[in-house]
Image 1 (cartoon, helix red, strand yellow):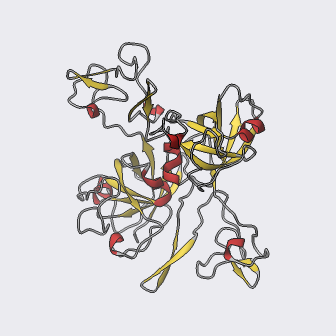
Image 2 (cartoon, rainbow, N blue to C red; image 1 turned 135 degrees about the vertical axis):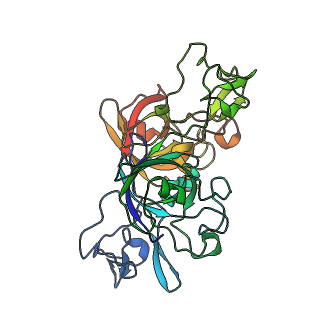
Image 3 (tube, rainbow, N blue to C red; image 1 turned 90 degrees about the vertical axis):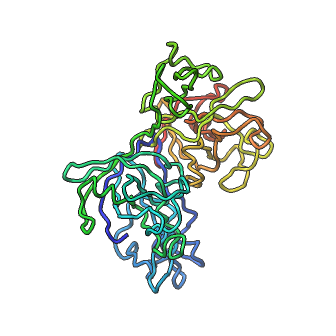
Length: 405
């Protein structure tokens, strides 16, 4: 991890942006009684919020961190050294700074356990990477491909197979390495060699996410299994064709195949009450501007949200500005507590807190109030959100954009 390179990360993201959550009440020199009373990395010293000498921050003595940055939330001491830990990464945009580090993903290498995405080891010749905890987003980036480009112009596409853990380290699972920094792309030997980089030097690079696809055939193309067919197509009699269970018309002319920019393909179907619904493990890529569907939800006890909100195991009154996100955007809970700015078509906007998942994989049971699975591009808003935007709740669905608040 000592070989770090600055890179630029471009994640095809959405029209919403996330702010970093904060329950703190005081900034620099503000009154405090406990650590929880202080903002960000500040700690309570003699009744006032101040820089943490263990972290070496200079928030109060110098300039504040930029808006939207990722702050360490605690430290980990191992082998006599203290390291900051992170449960976030810097905000994802079309060009995000990062560090490229070198890793050995093979058994007995410096990664410790097998890769998290597939529970497997990977040879040095494989083009694979790990991502810092925030970007890894609870595994939602598993299997995605990133194009990494060196300053010299050389580029390579590699697959996300693991997390570069920014929260834990210094144990056998992590090969006794310290926690990862918050902005790391951890590349295999093959990645470095394909870029023509000297593994003993630091090199500036940039990278961006491409949309994953394991499919090899479109309409009427040859296939043996479902995985051989593009998008929602299935393998019938050795050829990729429309799925009659979904009622799609990709090959018969009713609609065109999903383009790569659509970003997310259905992973299966769920039949309930005689109707068949597509299910998703992903959402469209997140950018600094992402289109979404705003739906209406009742997060209160006995409402149509079913069980308590996942993020805090609590119900929320109709008057609270809260939302749920489709499974892919929810990213295993990594967006919990973050604030998003939602903007209606006529320009009115409101900021709301992420408290729950709008489940795109499951539905039609008591846990989900017997509702079908959520679509993959939904921001599920409370009454208060709809009212603040001045929208007609009778419509039930409105096109919106959302951005990092």
